[in-house]
Image (tube, rainbow, N blue to C red; front, side):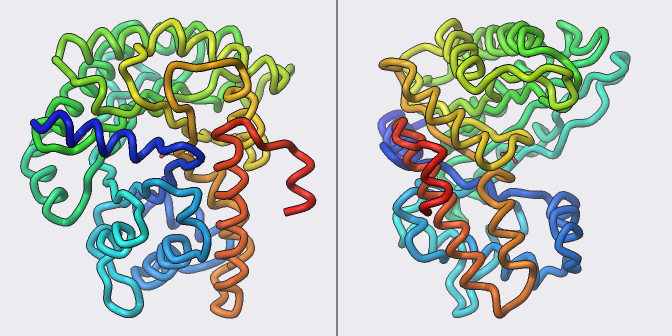
Length: 339
Ligand code: 13P
């Protein structure tokens, strides 16, 4: 493990005014996204869409890193440059999703456990050769009646820490992603309670597994009302609860926190990030690692039409720029109209 190299990469991933693009949708998930624009999910369509995002003029000013999928890290731009190499040339750090998805946790109905530890060391060695300098593992914690169990939180935290240790052993910065889902009908208070328990357990296990905190990035959910809740907490309340929760659990040695968007609309996700960054001095860089909230409007603008390739790129660069501003608290909703 090269500690100074890990710290250098982690800092680059959360460089001021920049954040991470999550473009690591599995083949199944990207098919769902393409379905919304009535586009077949062929390998060439997936490649062309990722090229649209990665080569969007101006986007590199606000994007520090891109999370790739196993298929994507092996693909190339139309002129034959491997994606990881192209991104590195733009000053963007290539990363790779390495978990194999959340599966039902046997014996605990409603809870899931993320799989993918077997053979992970060998896969990390290969991904490093392909150019990846960070990785991502997503634990999924749902909220429902009697869910999550304390045991599921513990099991997922343990797996996250084992993953993180293997990454650091191979000079790959782990993005540690414990996602408390916002899909339910729960209140913001319930989200705070579960996020508190989850982050508490995650940092206990990271410590126990001797993780070098300076060489990791945390990717948490925001503390937010469930999508199906009858009442939704204000953006100010989301920012206050999120900051309170993070301050309780994330040591200042961690260089950065990069949120997932989790089903928030693009504008909500940007506003929340900006308000969080205005909540006074924070001990970590706080930025985005959005999938849907960065891509949704670009995907619509493109619509799978080659004539709209540039329109899709412009929309992606616009969303990236607004989120870059939000990562230093300089975004306001009026910018949506002007931009
Ligand atoms: P969303 O921002 O769409 O939640 O995706 C981020 C991500 O990487 C989830 O694992």
